[in-house]
Length: 499
Image (cartoon, rainbow, N blue to C red; front, side, top):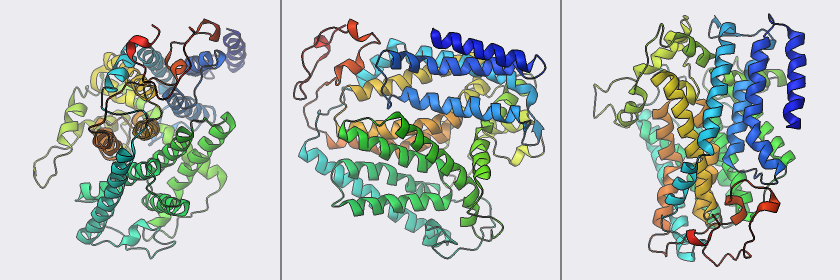
């Protein structure tokens, strides 16, 4: 309450000083988003129940950067022209929609449904500590994925007439290839997407003793990072790095300091901004580009990715008045996209994406590759009911992930799946394109989820809830019921837990 009162004073001064003609309503709504986003975190911190790895913090961080910080900086600096259109008139409605969406998301997150789903998922066979046989199977799966990924990429280079230098910073540490004038990407998408298998493979090998020494582990990590940097895969790099960082702490049973988290997040975000500029150097015939931009250029490029806020504002303004709803098309296409065009030459295109360009309605929008955040797709599909229900469902699923992890936090596979899923939430939020998100889930998280079942097949199923206090409802410490001391060897069943 004290924090809310202080924020109200600051907000009143800011809005009063700005005046009604100088973005007063936008500042009011943006401040409201900040309060609503941070409220569950402040409550947990005040009660001493804040876990820095709870997905709640990942979601909050992305929302504050993408839907508050970036848009406000552009608004207050007068740089509101995005993809050839001045988006100034869309800021207030977009801020209001984000505020409503965040409220729906937190309601879904705190419903009992997410906890119930997470508990039901624990019926998968497993044990608190992975047995030596399970760890051995994990190592086999990890190296098998690595070999399969390398084989697929080598085959892709041969069939596409490319060189392996394509993955080794071409033009910097390897000879650059000539430019690909086709502009149509690869016709062998599944072979190329195998590069994402390196993420689950590295994490599997890290938890199972698959690397005989630290230098080998770091060499593997560096190779994958270089390959992703060469291709300009910013968010795959973020998933790899964040998941690796988180997994290291999960294995030790520790949590990083707040300063470490903030410094690491800032470094990763700035690197993503640098890569957005420097990746042009790694493509052929790009001598005009530079890999050493100024700090201001890096910051601007970092924040340019937050322009999905403005594209959402344009969609909110145009749908359904000028552009019709997409309906279920984005979710039907989830089942169409995996079918190769070689098998289905008349495979339809995802034309619902054109509605975003039509909503922006500029010459540049057709070729801009414009995207919207996840709640933008919910709105594009079904309007306000879609946004509210979609955000509530997203909150339920995020809570289910956290509840599922807490049931057995010492299990190696659970740590891998949780770490990579937590990092993957960044991509889910900022890219409202369900077919792509589902596809990447199957390539990045799917192998780890499948491996959990394979590695622990035949072992005795258990239901472990530890640490017990972390899974209880939010209560002051004095109100926590007395519990017997936690012993890792004891499997706590549902009826032994306090209601």
